[in-house]
Length: 152
Image (cartoon, rainbow, N blue to C red):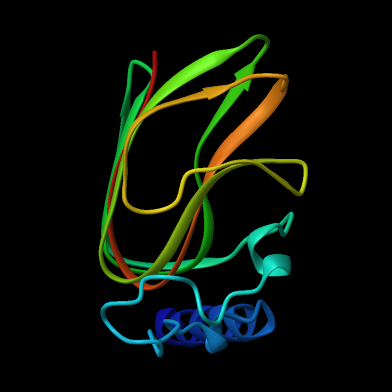
């Protein structure tokens, strides 16, 4: 009876994974060369989607006291890295490196790019004339990334 339950559970999980589209997950290849880190395959619709999708290999994300650190050996797709709710002009310290592949980083709100950051970046950005929920969104095509974002 236990064996039948295991097989039934495995079969149901396989059907769920296939029906959710997880059978098509794969990394987006970097086809524009190692020296060119601009996105080549992801479209503006992908970047501004309400439901972004991404695949992470060997990633670490740590958030403490308004500071988020993220690193990933291979990242493909689009993901919101960290979200904030702001009510006034807000400054963030950003250090964003792309070590391999293609990538983009920007501030996102309601299907709009509020502020472009782009790789590589090391400095402060000021978000003004925007209130409500924002996110720092990343996009990558087989990208190796290291990012630190701190609200100051």
